[in-house]
Length: 83
Image 1 (tube, rainbow, N blue to C red):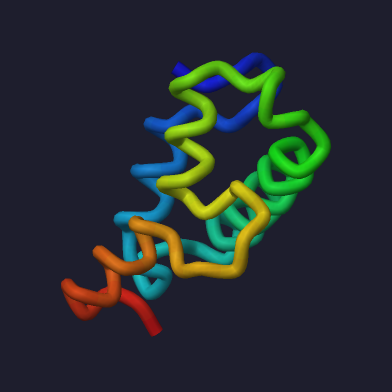
Image 2: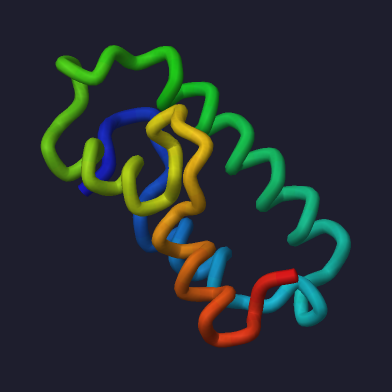
């Protein structure tokens, strides 16, 4: 379960698994806005204030402020779904 004020893990998964070519412009813009907000919220929330599940979710979605590829991006790349 994600922390209060953060994008749910289900929403992130659904958004990342649907190819951009199948999304409307509004969906793509919404995804970018939600992702940017969630990334900002992740950066502003101290690690020791995050729940264990939020820390894991941030690591999975690369919202842990490092520059490595996220597990989601790596999986998408392996399936040929990433640019």
